[in-house]
Image (cartoon, rainbow, N blue to C red):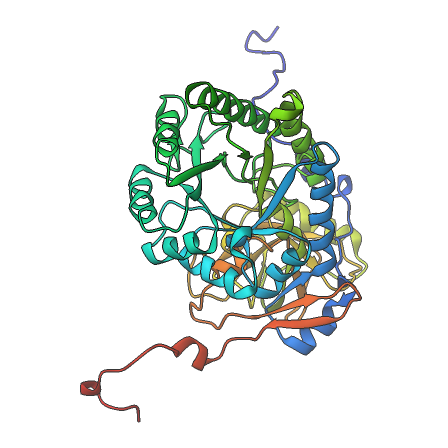
Length: 477
């Protein structure tokens, strides 16, 4: 008997990765057809690229409206007194904001720039919720004059608003942003007044004690891309308890509870198993968690519920059409129709990081801020007879960090082929930059499938507008 024998053991790997990971060990175990996206909102991808060029941001208006209406229905069917505001920082293109204004949503802004932008877009001052850790003095004066709701973030801001209230025509409607532990990490303690140590209650007492201020809202935004509906239930209970405490101490029943946003889209983080429908809770689950707490209150004591939503509404509606401009491969040829050769190649590529296809695209991380966290899907515009193979997606920037996907399965592609990156509607447009390239055009596809240009591709004049060269440096040649 071999005394060195040890029985088989289960390694720590089992359970540490999603069950689909086992399929990577065999080319036969995986779906061998890549997803193809031929049209966005009824507009053919090939036609969009030909007409507007690449890279190209494309938004499906029908998706925007469907998401807004589905969220409204989810909450209003459970709790009738709900106010919805669009989180402008996720995407502040005028046409996008106009869709939400048309759907009856207000605007939530976090800066002077955003405030000026939504006022110019036609949002009434009373439909604006002004958030953020720093609000300039001119923008606060304008918000007060317009009747916007100012949600106070810190003691210094409260002092500034108290000073401005001295000259105001009447009491100023304000809210208090409050942070708390809702059982998820990280706790967003950087913004607002702490609930646990009594700071929020002290801030409320100071506001109520000033006859020139009116405490309208208790507000909490517990995080972003929050996958736990129960955390919102905790936040609602804690805000409601603070509301009761304030009423007992000061005789003031706060009219509104604002549970913020943070509701997820169908985009997946890099480490998350899919599909999204299995791991991302539906909006109805969040509506259940929040409204169940409010419905337990006596009818006459139920507050207005306000929600500030961005990513959940816009992300899935946004696409970026990009073109393959170069192919970097491992020098292994795959003949069309040679399934066995393709599978053998795939097996080799799966076990070796070096043996991997690489596709250079005409869009990089300068346009895709969220690629650092989210596993953006890459969808070819045409069918292929070849099975998907592991590949990397690189951008055109002269920087090693310009990697959109370090690993994605795609059929073999050629220079000139189109890929649509999705979902990219949230934060990418607003945080894109001109680093070594112009920012691309943006198109809104109307519900009837008609593409409409909503932002032109940048030119040198756009980029240099506002620049000046001192006379001592001489005129341009």
